[in-house]
Length: 281
Image (cartoon, rainbow, N blue to C red):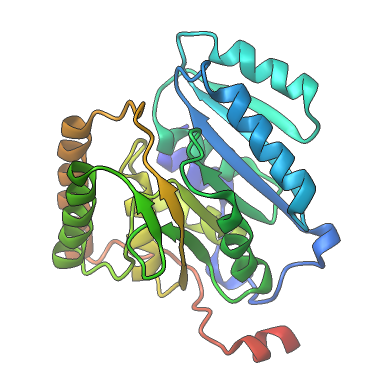
């Protein structure tokens, strides 16, 4: 689905989005998307672990959606088996690769109140998930991100990836004036109404999708909540660092051009009223 087609499909306007808390916990639905590409070796273990955790500790209704990005191994077979074995687990298959493409597809069509995603390796400690979601349910924030660079985060990873991550986020602050601390941690959530209003203006379909969405949110005067996370590097990560870096640089240049032309702002309302006022609304 193209960006223009998604825009026509969603047909959202800012003024139609009231500032209010979501429904009571028993009626709030949170959808967690796990984008995957050739992850047959880890998918069942990770989804099983996440399902057990949410079933035992999470106070809201949930749905886990496995988004298969055109895998060429047995990932889809494993995903289908999980949908049969575990309640509240479903799977969707896309014919093209791209994490952004997968998230756009699922988030754009969901009926959940809050949408989220996690990397399949579950590098981020799951105890951070409820703090990630709570500000969205309460109406305090519009988007919520896990941060490996915020004060209080505990991170285990090699010096190479640590340097790359810090340099990338510094680049975002200097070129795009980004205020959030960690653009690419695979642990994010948003109020569905807000995310669906932003999606039509986000062009990237791959790894830069996260960054573009967050910069657009900031430029649209939305509130981004950051959660310091415990995070352990996955030594089996298959991200092509060089190609991803080049794609990120091209994405930064493209977004910067759109900002200069005054095109990079979504029609969504500010949520800067105090929490007490929102709760009373």
